[in-house]
Amino acid sequence: MKPAAFEYHAPTSAEETVALLAELGDEGKTIAGGQSLVPMLALRLATFGHLVDLRRVHELRGIEQRDGTVRIGATTTQATLQRSEDIRDLVPLLARATPLIGHFQIRSRGTVGGSLAHADAAAEYPAVALTLDAELEALSVRGRRTIPAARFLTGTWTTALAEDELLTAVTFPVWRRPRGFAIEEFARRSGDFALAGAAVAVGLDAGGRVDRCAIGLFGLGPSACRAHTAEAGTMGREPAEDMADDIGRQALADLDSIPSDLHGSAGYRKRVGAAMVARAWRRAVREAVHG
Amino acid sequence: MADDIDIRIRVNGLPRRATVPPRLTLADFLRVNCGLTGTHLGCEHGVCGACTVLLDREAVRACLVFAVQADGSDVTTVEGIASPDGELSVVQAAFREHHGLQCGFCTPGFVVSVTAFLAENPKPTDEEIRAALSGNLCRCTGYQGIVNAVRAAADREDSV
Image 1 (spheres, each protein chain N blue to C red):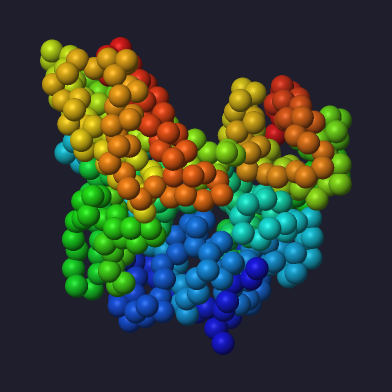
Image 2: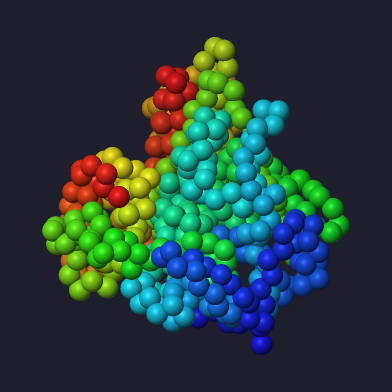
């Protein structure tokens, strides 16, 4: 239960960090909060010759508003997001997802970028980023690029980040009102990864009809995914809470790689997932209609 | 072999200097290098919460932080929770009064976690208390006495 030995680096700038990553290749791994990485090292599910700690790279931390978006530095902690009134006001879905992550002692250290880059299939932040069409910024010695969440998440614990790339920030669009957001998940114990979960974002036009809808699913496949068919089915309609069960069923209908293990069969997770979509739809619609 | 690293950490108000291997966890640093064995290690992979300490006043799992990552920080362990004269903190006294412990293995983690929780949420609801306790495992008392202890500590003025 002790990690294997590694060399430790604590660079002080993003440039210095990516230079190190380029030099170290697959022997190097960045560590931010370490709340997923350290258990994997302790259990020896992973070993790296070098850890590159981001704690002294202060430019990677912070929350700022920019032209109708909110940009969050990669090493901003989940606890910081939970305390942020700006996040509650501008990106409510992110604020509501945060208390579902682990426990408060985990959120003290866990970071937004770490959660996204780790890309656990049942994690909340990747699903939220996908649901809200967030954009992720990556830096390497080769330059800077922006990756849409839909292209960032490529599979279980895998992302579009190259070996020498550092995730520096994530930018969330601010939805105009009226809009509603909800995230629902089911786990057997508080703080566990969800057996199934869903995030719903709904926007209404001046006539009160759905003109924007995003449904994100997590814990239901190799990575978080969107229920595009179910989303499209809601467009232009007056949102009603009694559509919820149908939307839930439709959202889960096309999934073909739902995990099955001792915690729950694929069939069970499918039913739980549909129920989570339905619950989240009802709550999101209630907020969109009634504020 | 990986190079050892010089670190300085203030532990319960006292400055400590050490040269440590990077893979040494903060929990092992506190127990082995500082002799502060009140920080317990149950699972060593972030599940049980027994090793919870305050790192710059935030509750963290000391088994999920490397000592080198705490360089320059302030750490408070369960040994630093009571007054210097030994008088129990409000949280500790409430655990004693409400039978919030039995074998005591998990207790340091609970006490430190609850201290941080009440500092940030001085007037929690019962639901918030239960959510806050969910990150610490107790295998003998059962949680009712612990929940009662936190409620009682929160209901006192100036509880932390």
